[in-house]
Length: 150
Image (cartoon, rainbow, N blue to C red; front, top):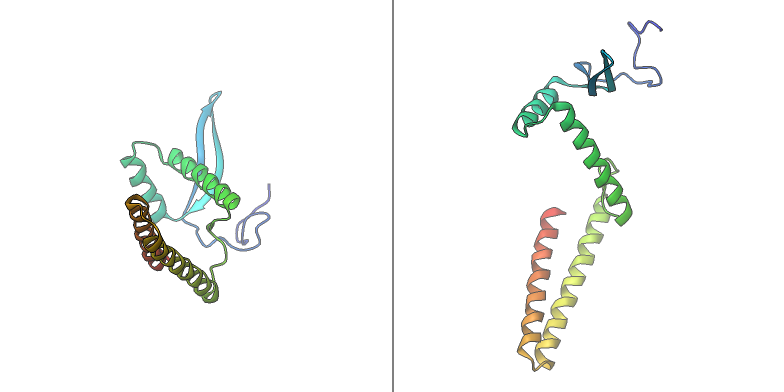
């Protein structure tokens, strides 16, 4: 075992970890009279305290909460990757990308509204007119959501 005192970073990590507060483990259990610790990580005491409060509210242990968070994050990430959705920890969108998406949504909204006008003029069925109006309302709601989220 090498002496790591006064040296920066862990073995294989060339930069110093800015969080030097707590060293925790994802899992810790007894096996054959020995304490087995898995998944060593460093974390600030503020996050540790907040995780402890959340774990208490959810009536679980802090390590079980962290395991569930990691499992759910992996599921979310894989699902987002499969459907082409946004994932965490990627480069943020440029303003140009944001404006382009906003314009595409505005064009879609105009198209839905114009189709609603065509449906009003050419359809004689009140059910189809009402369905068309409902689609316009949903499109306008999505437009507001899109404005607020983007």
